Length: 225
Image 1: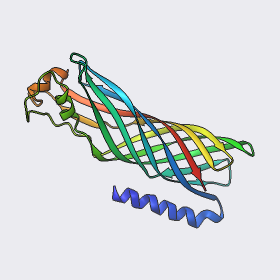
Image 2: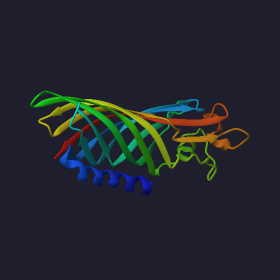
Image 3: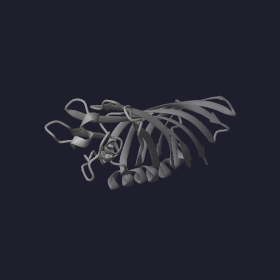
Image 4: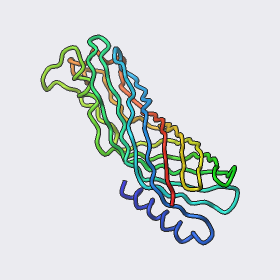
């Protein structure tokens, strides 16, 4: 993670050196996350996707031709979902805190002097900062839970995904965008066969493997100086 952060700032320095030939803008990006998590290996559990947020610095490097450019962000991101036992209607909220580093190839076009549009796509690197244990939360909504008898299902330390986005540009500084993040890797995976899960929550699992991927819809607002 440290190496990727260093790489991010190296790119920033490179952009500063190249500013004479292209346009470099700095700014702040904020927005809302809506999780769209998919689960394999669960039964009788309803998952409500809750809204979260993200915030952090952003840079945009525009090339002098074809409206092309590159943007990158260093974002603190929070996502939330709620597990509900469909038998007892008992629910618990599960949170995850991440450091997201999206890097996008960007095309923009000015329709009028005061408005424009853009399309963006590129990789997204996410690093788990802190998250609630999925196994412990599932144990909390099980029909019966033995004290201390909880299965640990931790999220992975890092994930890779792809971003696809579009938006409008107002007065050259304000960008309002809509983004979809498609994960390429699982955010959590656990072998649940051969008695590897606690009996207390065994009724909530179906199959041999628990696996989850956290897709995200995002609405963002960025102001570039």
